[in-house]
Length: 309
Ligand code: R2B
Ligand code: URA
Image (cartoon, rainbow, N blue to C red):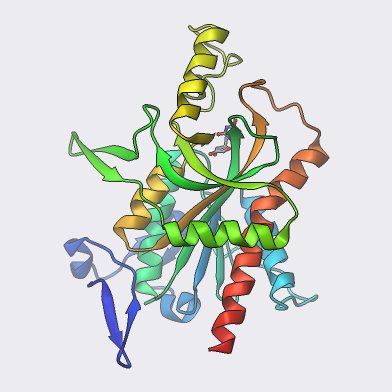
């Protein structure tokens, strides 16, 4: 499918998939969503989607849907929000109006499977003008816990803005560039809300929570506190303000499919001060809601602007 689709004389931004084999498939089974083109009317189910929010936990993605329903005035006290992916426990998916909310589990392999199927779903549903935001948690560097970071660039563990994957046994490097305008719009939303600190910064994406993030509290550790601190200082000098585990492949895959994308993660602790998550359940819960609140405000603002057009 081509990049832009002519529609009533206007060029709408479509979802781009780059796979000639898809054209020859009679059915496309989105196995981890328990959906398929032959058994589900994907355009009817998802054709109106304009915003997709993805996050690690199924529970949090359901709570995001409940929150956004209230914010958009689409709440129905008698309605349950059914998990569209019921029938599989791999991922959970909820929809309210033009907002789709999908869980992706932890780490690059898990989110990458979800994104392949999500991108095909949006493509089969003929969606246009879709914005995708990952809302999540992270460890901060030099920031007060609870600060929200909107990612400027997703960097690998050597502080390069790239995502490397092996395809047919060969390394393929992809760009992790995100949408600069969307990043700035999200920062502006945070200023309007004035509820918590938000910064724009680079995000380091790692393959592991423990050794990959220079923690001293894993089952194995072959470095000293000084080694850890000097690595985190190097990261800070490269503009890294937080560390998480999915942003690189998220940025790379959204860029390949021409999806407007952003990453918004709250920092749960300052990694220069420790490794363990010692804050109370209530404090962590409050932090978890911050990316949701920010993205909720952004969606509401955009939808109000659409209505005025
Ligand atoms: C943030 O938090 C998770 C690890 O606790 C991981 O999915 C991530 O990116
Ligand atoms: N998620 C991460 O990946 N790292 C942290 O330190 C906290 C949350």
